[in-house]
Length: 297
Image (cartoon, rainbow, N blue to C red; front, side, top):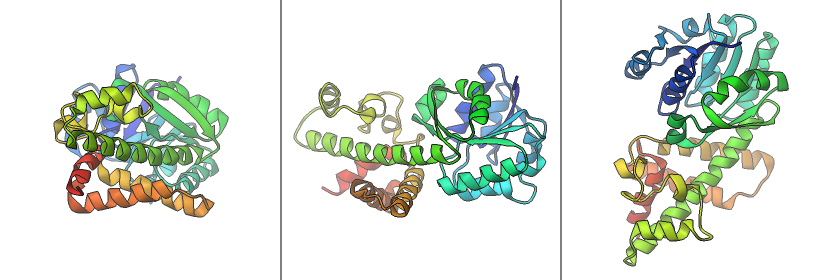
């Protein structure tokens, strides 16, 4: 039975995920460069480690939630990387959203060292991370997936095995491209309705009960004040930052190019989010695209 988890990367998503492991009676050792994020977890009973390596050395499993493929490869494959320092039999679970080829490179290296590993990017946003209702989209061997499932079940509600190593990343990138598209569409519709005198809350309820219904309307409304406890109602702070959406849309466009797949709406979404980041969106939640659209009127 896996009981001791090392959790590396305690950002907006990773912190609540690690807390849910604690709440499900796992022993958790945490590491992050942000000491304030570490303190939030140690105040709840986690142990702190000085380095990612020391966090992982005695753990039964390691979960990482990191911002880019380069950082993931550095943590796992770099000098004194985790693959070199963990004990045989340790299970590695990377929940970062990165390029599929980067995930495959790290997983292949883990398997060469006789260490199990899966890629398990997540969907659902910070609210689902806090509630323990995330969706995990996994790639890897059947046995590694089965070993990871009890850990993932402590943090999520829906756990999918998309296929072999890297398949979780492909599915996640496709999903986030669609997320960007319907967030922009939702923001356009609300902005246009409000410009004509409609109440954004009433407009949202109409669309939720009609053919325009989507996840952004249901749980992540981009219009300020319509829905409590979402980034739009706290000045677009917290949540999934514009920079991260831009990273994922860039991954989607690279994947589309390599696979010779037409993604015209995905390409336009990438262009709009990049413009938003360049203008005033840096550091804001991705639902702030509504604010960007207001400036384009």
